[in-house]
Length: 261
Length: 186
Image (cartoon, rainbow over all chains, first blue to last red; front, side, top):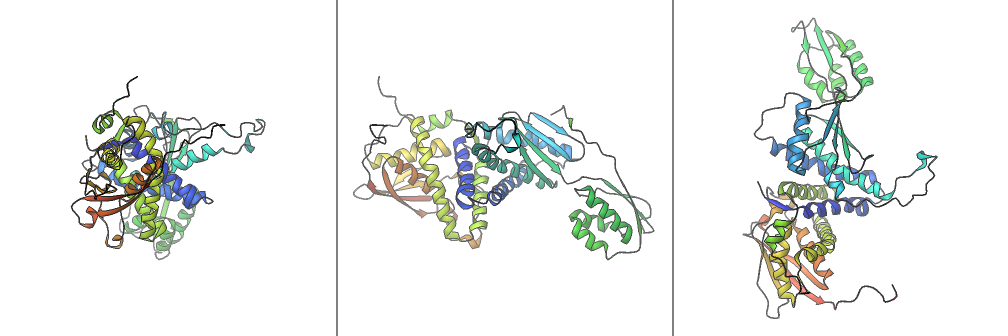
């Protein structure tokens, strides 16, 4: 067991960090506060993940990496594992901690506007303590995003606190569509298979159209495609000789529980 | 009932919930880094770290008093010893020592040879004016203010600047007599 500090050190530091950003620096700009708090978490996640995976072999797929976050990574931080993991097999994972330590130690004050009419739930404004809780959660969301990013998995992470003190972290990996690319007429004449990192189906269609219009020459482009749509399209415009055929893999929408976690 | 005996720093540290120090160290590092990005000026970062520490100190003192059973210290000398031996130990798991007392007992140094805040830390060249651990001086200043001691705290030695230890010079400015915080009719 390595060095330890009292838990109140971490709690005090986090509380003060959130309060500094959301009450002092950016009191009227919650988006900027959230962004900085998330960035701090990202940095922490990146470095922790680097340390905890030093002696490990690479993860075979996304699920393996996510399971690492749920088990080893979470245990290092909170001395317990994630309680429940779900996925839709299309890059979305829901990690639920039924008693998230950083929330259970925060005092959740009763709602100040308890007399809001119940017949119009849309009009219910979030009370102050929910806002504070959400602001705090930018930090662990950043940690998860940083940890996965260190494992080569770019993603977006958000938190759902509809069942306090349970907290669900929703991880959306940027792999909305798996695209199969077949190059014709190039030197590698038959089949190349590659995951394309792109999130939105609309953009995938756009990408397909551009690929059909301009074609591409070699596998080198795959790397450029991974960078993102703008860079990819820019590169594609330069290449015009080959024809490409693309088909999208079937999708499964519902979340399926992964029992082995 | 006989007064409860004060507890040693080791005993308290052994009994509190503890977490892996990497999380704490890296989080602090990430905060300093983000402050440098957001505030740009090293001087301003020093100031904000001190302010954050102060805010933490004024809250942390309650936990300190509750867990340590320390009764009022007779003088500033005893206070400094309690901070070094009990305060540092129960929160950070390390012990500091108190030296360099001046003749009238109002100024001393708290020396820290082992400091979890700076594990894995190296300052880049453009941060040379940074007092990386400035949050610590803020915490002590804040906590002491809550027990009616107004102090001024400066860094005399800093391992990140090549010194052999961390040394905080603590100067007692004035001791405010304690007041009962509530009016009679409340």
